[in-house]
Length: 407
Image (cartoon, rainbow, N blue to C red; front, side, top):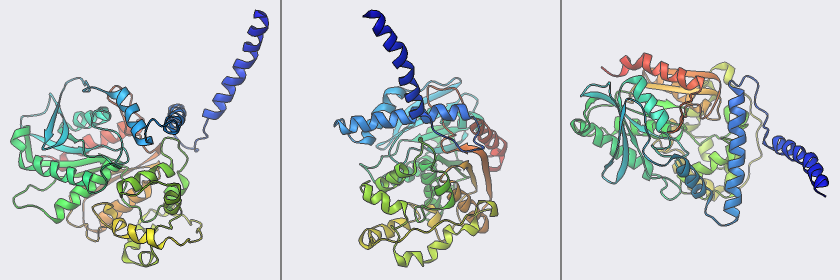
């Protein structure tokens, strides 16, 4: 009997392993760099998404709550970085984490940083590795803001927290040992959205005697939701780590809407835009003529459906420049920008469009489009020491251009 059981296991185990490997395998686009790492990440994300769905079905919470708990279980505690002092404080009721390299002077330039995570996930502690890298490479103090997250706190909660914290830093440089006249904002993904929105708000409504921001550093930022069928959206929905329907769900959360299958389908087919808005001046802000010729594509049209009530509710949100900075009519007053996009990212088109609109508005722009990488390359968690090639390239570019922003 024992021999028979052993033989069964010997036969069945490889079959099970092959089946699991087949399920975990995901084809990746030609030209993607560091493919072995990408395959590993996609497999982990597929397992994580399966884990989240099972726990959600079993009643252990919403998908966002389960993801947050998973993140926190892996990344709890204050991060440790060599040659850094990392402190946790509050600006009013807003938690902040301050990264001070030991090499910075007593009156250091500073960056106010907003982490990514779809306005709903992550924290300064979770993303501490990448934040510390910016502080190290640019030799500046970085103050990272733990803004309120959606869906519990939709717009304008995160935006208000980021504006409030940035203004406080600009008004209280001595408290933080920084030079208030040498402060910029930065962020990745949804954090890049918030950085651009804060820069726009302070440029348009500058309080009296408040120092101007020196720069905005936007790493694959999310900047619009008027057209969710731009070429980069259609061609780059290939990663388990950043699926289009999940990101649309996070957009809905941020806008205070439910992420129902119906709502996600409406947005993914561009049926969330009213006929009037499709003919408005805002359409020119997402025109493919803002893209390099080799990035332009003819996208198949999808039949329109009748969602007038829902589209009407969304309209003022879609064109609010403090939610989606690409919708700003006037960008001429914003600070110089350093914008990074990448080839296999759904958000690459809007980042490149924003860079071009800034150029046409007379704003100094450094735009870097990195080939061979996808969304999320600028990620080093607090307990990780590995960096993608694109992350290192971005950090080196920031180091090289530091003198353009900070004295």
